[in-house]
Amino acid sequence: MSVYLTIFGKPRYLGLTKVDTDSLNSKWVLLKTSRGYEMGLPGGMLSEEQQEKYKLATSTFEDSTQTMLHEVEFVREANARDIEFYYMCKREEDKALLIAREILQDHKLNMKLVDVEYMLDRKKMYFYFTAGQRVDFRLYVRDLAHEFKTRIEMRQVGIRDEARIVKGISSCGRPCCCSYWLRGFSPISIKIVKEQRSALNPIKISGLCGRLMCCMSYEKENYTELWSKLPGPGAKIKTEHGIYVLDSVELGTERVNVRFPNGRLVSISIEEFPDFKEAVLQGEEWGEDKELLEKKKAAAARIAMLKERAERKRTREKRLELKDVVKSKPATKKDKQPLNESPKSKSKSKANYRRKRPKNPKPKTNPPS
Image (cartoon, rainbow, N blue to C red; front, side):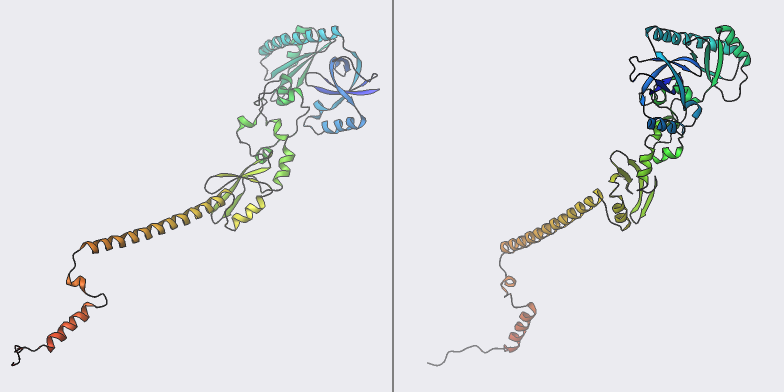
């Protein structure tokens, strides 16, 4: 005896089915559930350990009545006739939904009819609806029973279950997770969105149901572990050079984006973040800023050296110009003055000469021959 996990019904209930054979040759199986005869889709054979895991996992969802594991009875593998009848019922469900909505307009009830589901034995019809408050639909059910000549059951569902039943394309371009593989809805809070530093725009973080998207919870554990090594989202590091803000994290590359005081966004690995924090608190530069500072210092030193060379060159050129000017002038008594004799000493020598010279010198006469 093998136990198979099967999916049945429009709300995609999970059921445990005991099958005598070890393998199923058909894609569909005929099941007898608490609702009646239904077509089921076998998922795979389960061990006892896997059964306990499924029971434990489904008990933690928000609506355990909708996602619990059901004990269903295996009737037989579906043949071609069963499958054809199943798809015929689905086509009639679309027509029945339009008729039921027309009848609902006459009753003017504050409710929204989502979908209709036929049982294979045609003895029961399920109508799924959403409503903001309690609705008295007894007269509406009576009219539906009169119209479809079968037993009617109304099932109120939440807005998330509505998206799961109706199905649709999400903002990522793929079908909604709840409509084809997601079993239950885990609780999602705005705290999870803030941890991921996602935009707090309701349009961007909400699904077709209007609630926070289920995919926000897929990486919750990874982000929780990541933020355990870092300060909180949006944390600020105040230094003498300005304020550094922890802007966002990149889960795939395990890097954190920090906005520097000059407005530039720098990516730093999580392992280097403690060293980065210590460096900026001590007033040191980091990463590209450090390299840029060193380049600026080297450029300033080179500019200073070039200025000094240019100044030396100008001084040398001025000296050469002065020498050329001196050579081009005619020689004068002033220019013939010895270099070691100052103008003051020269004036003194002239005065001494004048003092020693007699006022009326006698003319020289020749000696007698």
